[in-house]
Length: 611
Ligand code: F6R
Image 1 (tube, rainbow, N blue to C red):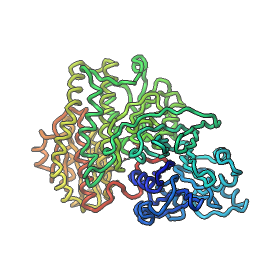
Image 2: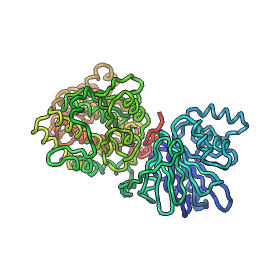
Image 3: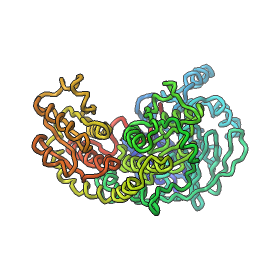
Image 4: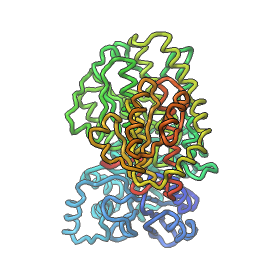
């Protein structure tokens, strides 16, 4: 969603802000803006433009037109008010004295706006953010911090704020509630940002703001306060992501780069966790008796992470014989879930910031459950609010459509299922060891699948003109069909649905007509003959069938399907980590051939911090 960056130091702020914003573009946005304090004029200089960041950047000649060493910048993803220059951030107060950038939503903005209008304060935008800027000025009597404090007592909702006032041209104020914000400590400069990638070029020393905290940044120091305005000492952590991990490195798209990075990501995620024939989770403490006493495991997540949860259900139930329920995080808190102290709630989130997932986590905690999260972004809100965290260590994922974070989430779920099964004694020694060997082999097998990318590109060239695609499969192949379908629709804009194959004859098969494209998944050995029957069923009604199966079943499938993609033969536990790769590549190449904006699909954002 929206991105925030702020800088105070000795260098020109505008180029630093524009560069920081360019690193946040992947989050999705529709307009951008910056405010810089111009010391020669003694005022704030605010520039905003609808559209891509380069529109703003060109207007400002890369920032060269703006003079000043303190400023805030923003990429906006419209919620209140259409994308436009006026509705872009920074939003300023009536006199132009105070500028605010904001991520999140102010729920009671209408009421506050009416109040301010009744006080004779005119509004220029339709945004909820303008209310914050106007309200700060309304309370401002020379003490900015106290005015901000008074505003925070009145606004409700989720917000990360960057605030700049022309009376205090050496200070930035940062505020966080339910929307991420980090502080960066540079040499003679300080930063605020919604995402570490925005400031990684300048500093690796960061601290994570907690909900309710406020910070005052100057070029030499950052002082944080809690909601009672008591000073708080922040832990400064070193970010170990490499800068080039957040850059394209010669690839045309981040998505393709991230697909190709999966072998390394999986190695990073798996190998340190298998030692001397055992799954080892460092910094992870669940009492074995607690695991034995578990009555239920809930998996809660959104989108692709939810699809990982579906695979996780099959794997955890099979290996541990504990009941597992999977819920969409956006539904969880409205479904009166049955959670108690014997329920482990596994929360899966790449970003660690998805608002619905966070709300589900809090509801699960309220009901007495223990929270174990599987997260990619270190220090993210979900990671920090969980009892236990397993990081996926996939490295920064920039493309909106998740790929390497998804496959490492799957790998962590496999490790977790084996770990629990070992504690519970529900897996035989031999089986356990072979599973671990297969997991260690997995990155090489993914490399093997990636080496077939040209075949998949060829299939994409055959099918990219279809208007509608069905994905079918059973059990894990159904869960993978859902992910393949989501990948395709989100980046290529082709209508696509995934069905459990057995459901076809209960309705969907009426949609199959000559030329309909069906992607049929049949990687699961024990269900292969069933998959074949479904291929025959749709083929005989004229469908074009692109099948995905394992090497040993290729021949049989080739006799029936129109085209066949393959993955190496593997144990069911690791099959999904392999089968997702051709599906990702297929979606990528189809989108490429349709000329879509692959890394930033329309209407989508990388981190969904609104409900
Ligand atoms: C699809 C995709 C989304 C996310 C979903 C949850 O490619 O990326 O469906 O999986 O928005 O996001 P996280 O995992 O960050 O909670």
